[in-house]
Image 1 (cartoon, rainbow, N blue to C red):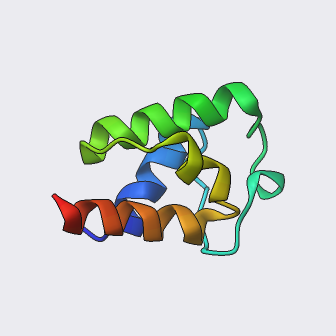
Image 2: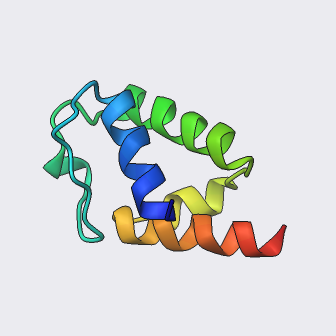
Length: 79
């Protein structure tokens, strides 16, 4: 399974919406219920699933789903 496929499953689970189909240009404005609390849940779920940790600086630079996927892939290759 690709990173974006796994990430899509996480989004569906965190936002309790099986119809979500993430795209690289998606932002919090594109997903119902994506607020600060759900963002924390999303990031902690991603970190647990991929066995990675994001720094505060990395999180602040992420502007969309594409940035998130790129950061996940970079961290996975660094392991």
